[in-house]
Amino acid sequence: MDIFVFSAGVNWGVLIYQAKQLIGWRPQFDWAFWRSLLRRGYPLAISGVLSIIYFSASSLILSVIKPPAEVGIFRLAYKVLESLIFFPAMFAGLIMPLLSRFALGERFKFQQVFQKSWDVLLIFTLPLVAGAALLAQPIVFLLGGRQYSEAAPVLSILMIAVAAIFLSTLFSYALIALGQEKKIMMTAGAAVIGNLLLNIFLLPRYSYLGAAWVTTVTESGVALALVFFLWPIIKNLSFKKALKSFAATVLMVMILWWGRGQNTAWLISGGALFYFLTLKILGGFSWQEVRSLINSQHD
Image 1: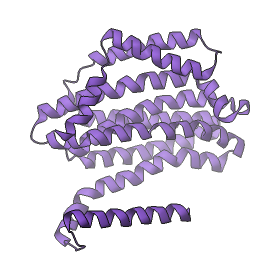
Image 2 (image 1 turned 135 degrees about the horizontal axis):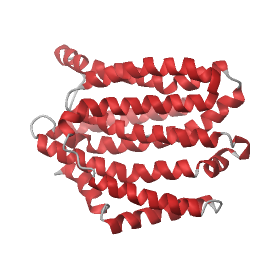
Image 3 (image 1 turned 90 degrees about the vertical axis):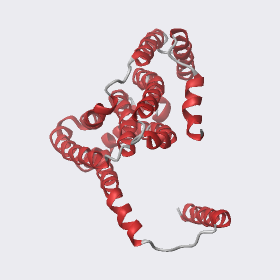
Image 4 (image 1 turned 180 degrees about the horizontal axis):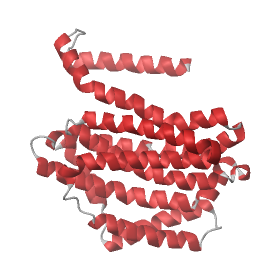
């Protein structure tokens, strides 16, 4: 931890020095600016705190009312979820400048950017979620060993939550670009209340399976609420490529089911290759579209 803090401090100092060399800035306080920033930023700050609460509540409550073995089963599957949700945040961060640029003045271009982002996100989300849910048992064996076999159904359930988080991340960034941060805060507040109630009622009886369903219901509810707020802007959203992605995913799942029991690494790599080849044949995928979406922020 000390090394991490030290390296972060060194990195911060180097960045400050380089920025000062480039733009010649000096520290100063602009109280009017800070008041404006806090007025706009407090909904996101509160949303972040509330999100941490409902994201961590199931693990915390489970650790209090259930033995460590059951907590470990849930946490193994939950670690997979925590590892995967980095990707939508990274992707949404790349397209956020475009969403912000067109949010207020050029709604048609905003809709275009959102449509492309939606298409690209679903292209990767659908096979990831379906494949991981189907291969949950070998994945769990790979990560924790056969003693964690009971974590497989937990992982399958949590993959639904992963899909919801992937989509709600895009929805959240779009609402932020539109200046509707308070709606995100309202959604997070409702999610905390719903999550705690579900945890109280389900965890004592259903343990780690209950915790998985609480997480999935909470994240799905958040995604639905955010898309409800965003719908007036994206109501012309096309599902054409989403349907092609879904069709390719179904075929991939059939192949994985047929080959179950084989080497896990071969199944994952072979399934991914089959999916993208199928999607390419169906006309639902082009690397050019992905590159154009990312590169267009520099135009």
